[in-house]
Length: 182
Image 1: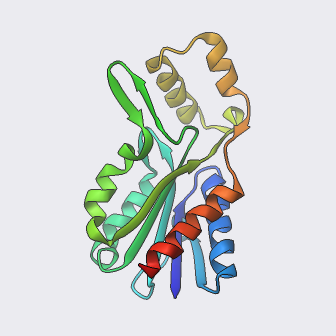
Image 2 (image 1 turned 90 degrees about the vertical axis):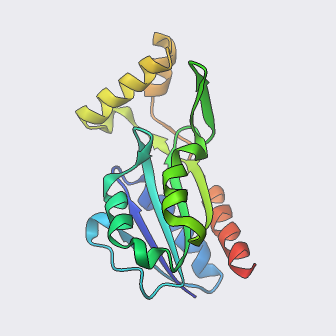
């Protein structure tokens, strides 16, 4: 099986996760090519399976992956697709009588990719606040204000932290392999 992994990775975490996924698929005997969308990822036309990945920013995937999906939507809808996104919280947060986050953030992509989408997950990411651009830091500050976090909670969240687990990324790859057999 030919597998194409295309990611949008602003700070490198998604690219690292894609490498772990590829590693597990290669161990299963699959032919895998991994590209960052920023590096002019190829058309998915020759792939049996396309895995799309991105960090979540402002409740959506990075624009580069959005553009790749839009550019190749007709071909993608003829392929089998898996989708992953990285976040510092994989489940939803409830505030102001609404749920924010979790798989619900991927709903527009579920609708866009329709029946070709065989699997999707939010996987653990990492946060190193001091590496963020000024724009990303301001957006995160706004998100913390929306959640009404205390100054102590904000300081804890600004400390470097990771939820990335190679085992979780391998499990994602194993779930895809199982679903490809169905």
